[in-house]
Image 1 (cartoon, rainbow over the protein chains, first blue to last red):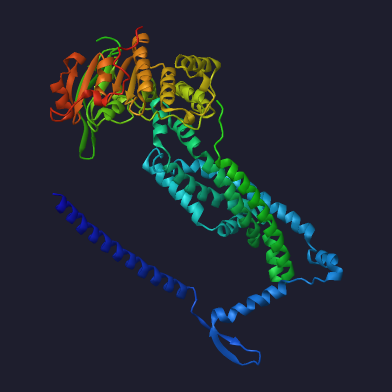
Image 2 (image 1 turned 135 degrees about the horizontal axis):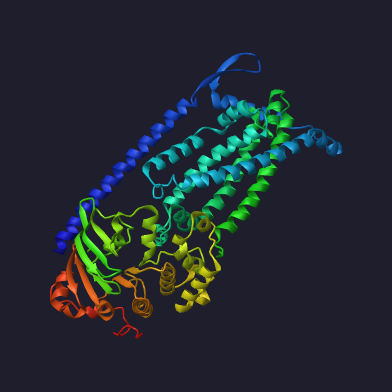
Length: 302
Length: 269
């Protein structure tokens, strides 16, 4: 009896192991093929013509040909800075600081408003969009498709539409980012909702709670830390978005990036870069501190 | 018919091809203490969940006080669930909220949607919650998060919450299966007290035969979704027990399944 059981396990084990090996190989080959194909589709293997210093033309792999131009760009971005007139040179470099700081403030305001608005809408949408909580399949389908559309259309496209509708300015950008945030938050929190302990919801249902009570008492306390933590993370992401969305006229620092690029004022681009980077770094740092505090459980009151 | 009688007629619930509860008909008079026993998967939990409509019946009818509760919808259904309180093996509290709020959740069916969204309860309700917590020796933990309490304490919070529903029937789905013997006795004593003092009908799913014998007026045994035995503890002979659990007659000792500290009668009232 024991012998046959062992022999059976042996046979099962061999079959199990060879099946696993086959699937590992299949995955490796498929992935490699996909990587090569998509790289080719992205012009990774393209050979391009370049001009040499003596004026003759030659062929070179696109990456090798272009990598030097990156250095060229960096070189052109670098401002004139001399030791004996450093203060003056820096002031010169940041000549537009007044306007830039105003636009930076606008950028942060847009991101903040968009996070609040989009976060609130996404939070509300996350309950009908959760498989285990939706009151019926129709509501589930509608909520999911709405979140999908809001999430998958890029912010820049929404921004273009809103600039057309509401004119150039931060309102368009804020709405565009808020809409994207709604979709992303709804998706993420609906997944958190699907992973909750449903027994708590049963406890509310058994006491005669309606759908909104089940959500408020059975679900929200369980996902609240996720929501707070994700909102802060989303704020960080939205700061990045709002600093570039002005490129299409939707408010914030982005418009200055565009102006500087189109006038080929590359040191201005670097200055804007420095300002943006510093702001993002500070906000990321603060938000992460806050997030860690949120994740820790805290007492509630009746 | 006596007021407060619970009647099940041909109650059936199928999950896909599996029949969890198969054509169960029972009449339970007001104030009876009923223990439901049977193997895991015999349909005990589904039966209880059918009664307070957490699970929808496939066929059959549930009546209470002559009213067909198996057809209720919306507000009337929520009021039936309120009248038919339930406690669970895993307590099913909101672990991140404090004990007092968890007890006040028992009042949820008495509130409109907005006041329950804001967790706004009246002073009278808070006072009632405090009395319930005092009765269950939990006043000291009232402002602690429910999740930080021991299993026995959490089950008592669940009982306090169900008392605030002011129910007429009390369902308990294996209330002591996750508890140590001392806490198990405490919870069973409390159910007995609710039964005797407040006159509530109590239906308890149990795994432990001696507990069922010690507390119940009536024992219902289920096997494969059907009622296999329905009688007094005295009528539940060893032969019947062997049949219920489907085990051979030489290797069964009821004491092995015991969770009681010692066999004792329910608290005198």
